[in-house]
Image (spheres, chains in turn purple, brown):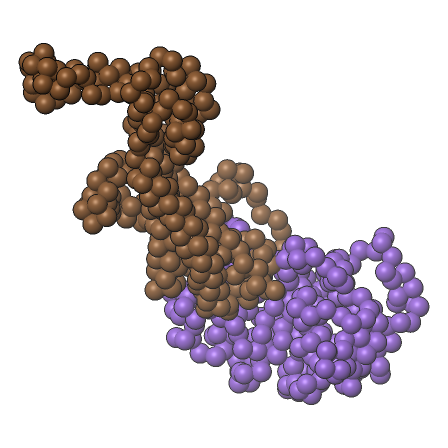
Amino acid sequence: MMVDSTSPSLYATFPGQERDYRGQVILHRVTKVFPGGTCVLEDVSLRIAQGEFVFITGVSGAGKSTLLRLLYGAEAVTQGRVIVDNTELTRIRPRPLALLRRRLGVVFQDYRLLSNRTVNENVAFVLRAQGMSPAEIRRRLEPTLKMVGLAHKGQRFPHELSGGEQQRLSLARAIVNTPTILLADEPTGNLDQENSLLVLQILERLNSFGVTILMTTHDPYLLAQARHRVLRLQDGHLFDVTPVGP
Amino acid sequence: MTTPRPWMAPSLLSTFGYKLAYLLHETLLGLRRGGWLNWAAVSTLMVLLFLVGISLHLSWGLESSLGSLGNQLQISAYLRPAESAQSVLPTVRALEHVATVQVITKEQAWKSLLIDMGLRDQAAVEQQLGHNPLVDTLRVQVDNILYLDAVAAALKRLAPIEEVAYGSQVVRQLQSLQETLRLGSLTVTGVLTLATVAVITTTIRLIVMARRREIEVMQLVGATAAWIYLPFVLQGFLFGVIGALAAWALILGSQGVLADLFGSVLALPFLKGIGDPDPGRYWLLPLMLLGLGTFLGTMGSLIAVRRSSR
């Protein structure tokens, strides 16, 4: 079923000023065309409610990463509107964008860790970059590392960790500033099944605390295990392919 | 993990304190990672500031030398034998740019000549020569050395004056030296300023590129552009401070060499005094070097950061 987000029931009031979009992700008739002419998204509309866990699936090159990049402001839409956690991203200025990113967590397939900094420093770096005090950084560091199971490896460097541990470190970095929305771009793409499930468990735990999760994947095993809403991106359109329960 | 909640706001002072500590830490980290590139930037700045400083120093020295020479250089105007100094004095005093006029009568001149020659018996000498052979002389000082030639020419045009004499050659040489120095230092400063800004820009850009991954992560987690790039601008500022201090030390160290150069090689012994700066200007030179250095350092890094953040 194609996601018809233009139906009046859902978007009759969109984008009214009085509505509260905290913790939500909203795409309204979004089109994204790259300068070369490639159209990755065509008139796509979508609403993800606060505290929802949504998978985005699709073949490589379908535009899953581009969709996420639109949500954290690394790409701009060609047409349409994007609202993330009450912030409109269309023509957003650098400072409001920076402030929005402090409320988001982003995880990548290639981890994007700082190789010359220890586990502790990789996580603390995020908080320092936001201007937090050393006391506040210390207060947040331990519970975060504990949650991803890396509390005992704080002094290790990324190259001393396994792939699964590196991804969990990347997750710790994304959640240490207690985001309201977490965007995960193929976080299990480089992991075996066991580590993929571990990452999924952490994400589900976060979700249970009320964090909205948007995760791209093309791993059918994970999709089957998790039983969350699944959207497939194909030919520039989003289709709801959530499996029907038993 | 607990649910998202705002943390206690720390006091304004401690917030400022750790933010400052963070910026300084990142700046020093950048300096450490810059390696030899730092030295390329600092040494280019140092050479530029040294040359600017030296030429300023020399220029000021020459200026004060010329000023003091101007006071010392007098035009001696020798009157015709039949003329009296008193008759021409009002006309000379009325000339433009004449500061003082001293009259030396032929009698005074004669006396001092005899004393200089060590002849005590004045009457005997006069008897031998028949009469006092000297003429009345006017010693004219000008208010500005630039008008020395003009005043001398005006004096020569006066009928009672037969001849004028003054050290015109020395003055012209000094003036042309000052002019050449000014032109040369302007050219060198201009070229070196461009080179310095280019080197600093490249240095900071390379350091920014080397830390691209960190900057990318910082951008992702919501660090503001000012927070990310301020350490790089501070680094450029520090290049300026270090370059200026090094240049000032070099200038102080090279003063002895300069004095020797002027005293012996260029045969301008009176310029030896250039090594001793005017007390009023003693702090002006390092302050100017510091100002120029930090301005260029900051400018170079701002250009680099602006290009990198696009």
